[in-house]
Image (spheres, helix red, strand yellow):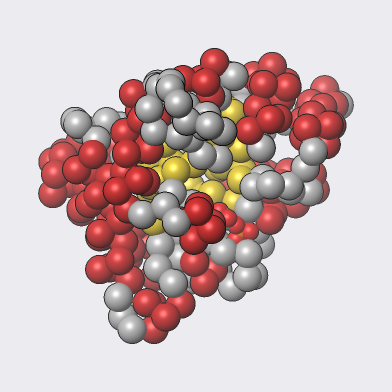
Length: 263
Ligand code: PEP
């Protein structure tokens, strides 16, 4: 964990939880806090929850009261227009989202989002005032072929070309596809090596401003393995799927990375 970048722990709920279940989860978290479960100091770690699009507005005031950020899981390019089914970054911001996941491997795989689309979405998120969490990562076959760096380079360079100027809000999540939802996380030293590589790519374009860009790791992160990533200098937090869905595993994760409650 770096001394200059505030670590980020983000929960990606994907297409899990109804709106009612999302609200109930945050209400239960709030009840635990009221009963004495100490939230981490916001200066120590930034927490973000990314529910389904329909749950954004209902959970927004509850997360805000906890001092927790609200993230969407995708956005459309553009601000408004003839885009049936589209949800722009501006609409997400109106629903009080602060962050948005961009280019998750499930979007790339299931919706055919190519690097150029992901890059345009990252730029659109920034233009709408959101913090994009841009996901990059290789498949198992690419890893076996020793192509990890080549793959993530193409994915990140596309984003850097689309974002007009250095922007410290840009957040990158290294999420190897073979580690997502498999229970087989990357080794922290391997993830760290890729994170350093990604930062070097940002530095190539943005110079010293790359030092402010956060690079997360995602892929089967749990309370049991998170510290390995958290303690790596090159890694600035985690994007978490499965372990964020249940209250106990989520709170255990948060408590593991922020063990000292505020005085
Ligand atoms: C994800 O989908 O972003 C993710 C990291 O999932 P999991 O933690 O379940 O591997």
